[in-house]
Amino acid sequence: MNHVGQWLQAYYDGELDHRTAMRVETHLAACPACCAELEALRALSALLQASPPASLTPTPEQFAAQVALKLPRREREPLAERSLTFLWRLAPLLIVTTWVFVQSVSIVSTGIVALVGLGIGDETLAALLPVAEAGVGPTWPSAALNALGLDAVSTILKELQALRWLAVTPLGIVVFMAVTALAIASWVATWLLRSKASNRMNHLNADG
Amino acid sequence: MRYAQGEGDLGPEETEAQNLVLQAQGGDRRAFGELIRLHRDGVVNVVYRLCGDAMLAEDAAQECFIRAWQNLDSYRPRSAFRNWLYRIASNYALTELRRERPTTDIEHASLGARQAGPEATVEDRERASVVQAAVLALPEASRIALVLREYEGLSYREIAETLDIPIGTVMSRLDYARGQLRKTLASYVEIGA
Picture 1: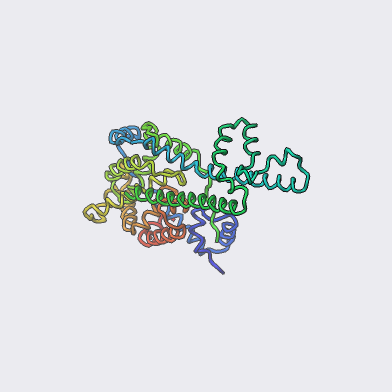
Picture 2: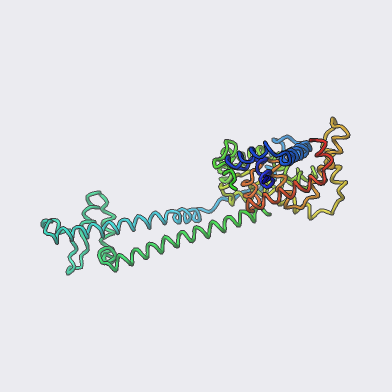
């Protein structure tokens, strides 16, 4: 018979999953030796529990008041630091939003080019395409933003015309995706390092 | 062998504690006072069981809460606040024990007997002394695991988080502690059974 001695402690402590616990119970029903072991565990626990706890003179409220008198002042994180922390937490959202926007411009522009090339689009559609000779980028993003009432964003985009190649050329798209991936990876790495450092400080502080 | 997954959600007491911790982290002393009131007995008990000295336990508990207050910003709610406190308490208790002049088992045992109270019989007091001495004779690592399991009812996962050790190590330390105590307290265990 295979005894369950190695599982008895975990069974007694209620730490086994249901299936394993059932197996142990089935075994215990037929094994006096393991039953005796389990009873010994129970007897030991009962003996330990019978030992009285420390009796304290002050009530919990008095104790809390005594401690409160000794608590030093807590200093809040400075506003500048809190602002930086907030911006750092917002960074991945900004990166992803920018990436989505640029990808959208690229996809829609490619779609417009394909339609015009197939002769499906009319003159209005063709007017939305970039005019390479004049060095002007796609006009449809600015038109869309103006239509949505985001004139300020449209103005900023016009100022960034020099970067239009990121959205419309294959090399630009690859570069932009690589930069975005690098930015996200850097943020994740920083977050992991900060979490580890925070955990280490947590343990060091708990270790006194 | 698979173990029970353990509680994934925090109980209502721990949820309340987490809310109080958030307020205390913002500087709310009243909230921290409530945390002290909620966890005082547990912290004192852990220290007392680890070092067998009731007076030290009370002083140590105060010091633990002061340290917790000072380092509250470093607490992360991934584990129960209670477990974080117990870690501070157990480390402080053992540090103080190592710093103190070594005392005999008899001195520690007599402290355990005095805690039994006037209504306890002579036999009860003697038993309490012997049990306390046996627990104090355990190696520190096993003693902490035993105290957190037997007296505070922490799960294996909670003990592992508190002590920052694997669950397997928790089990082996518990197994060792219980095995040693069964040998030392053999006559009392048989009488109890």
